[in-house]
Image (cartoon, rainbow, N blue to C red):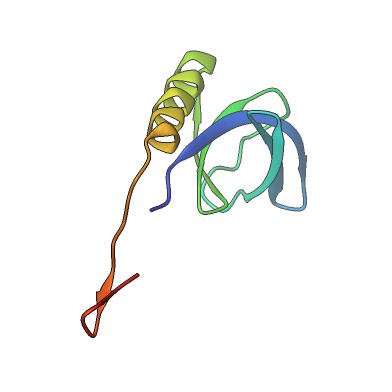
Length: 84
């Protein structure tokens, strides 16, 4: 499952943005949003900037992501009557 992330744009170059997402720098393409500049907050999904957002909207998105990452999922697979 992929979650939408949000962060602050640090740098823009060659149609890509360097985005600070909770202290990790991620590169995201600017195919759909052209007016992004350093200091803007954006939502990214699968390495593509989808939209510019306010700082509070970015923080809300990250809070939702943190909630999902903190939940433990226990998966059990059964293949040919064997449990893994």
